[in-house]
Length: 114
Length: 215
Image (cartoon, rainbow over all chains, first blue to last red; front, side, top):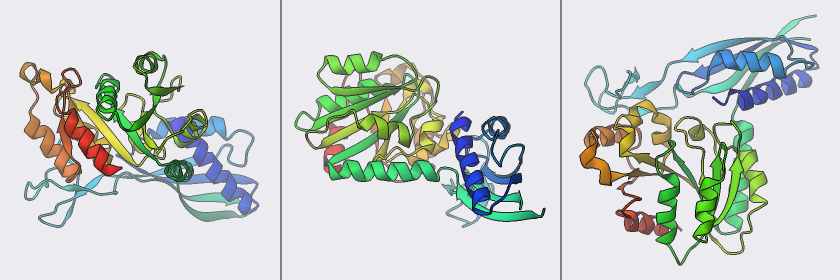
């Protein structure tokens, strides 16, 4: 829902990095997106194409790595992928604790023409 | 021309978080304790605020009202003498750091006290953006259903305090408070949960005492 303002930040990060490396063109942008971050990747690409016009990032392809949300079972001390509408550990049924795994949203790397 | 792969590892929320940190420093230097009030549309955010502010007459309260459109809530608060500034986002689903930074210039903090920032009615996006608050207060109403912590985990996970509102309607709705609490506790083991009714005023003296102890 808030992809526009976040994509502006992505373009800013990408163009700053490109400028630091004196690059004329950005070929690819590798993003890491946790599935509980609420980000709709298709919207990010649409906004990216619009916002990046006229900058080094124009025409760059977004490559997205998805991360499944995981919880930590306090009983088994093991991570598990969060089931829908439940927080129960699949092995013992104890409710898992939230972790940061699955809420990622960052620019991992970019590929540049230098 | 060479294709070069550059490690970046920059969080996309960094810029917002930096602005939020500055807001937080500025507010604390004025003795202002800021509360980010989150909840779904119709959860009773403004009505709960009115109960809290009336229950703390000795403390100066300020309100920033965030709405996509309209100033209905601001008019309501100003009518009962509460200092309120309106923000309209015209479509944007949440408040963010830069929006709050520019709005704070319009608030005259002549006394120290509490700043309530009522976020856009939405359980998704507001949880993602820090706005310089000390704590997030989440209002959930029994009419929304008992499955909300399971469906919107982040909002419940990040809240420092939860108000379960409209409890006067409990006999009329199928709301399993144990199922609600179980999901909430898995995400957020320690945040206090207050059962309240903004309609009858029940439960707000406990909320006010808890808030007062925070100052």
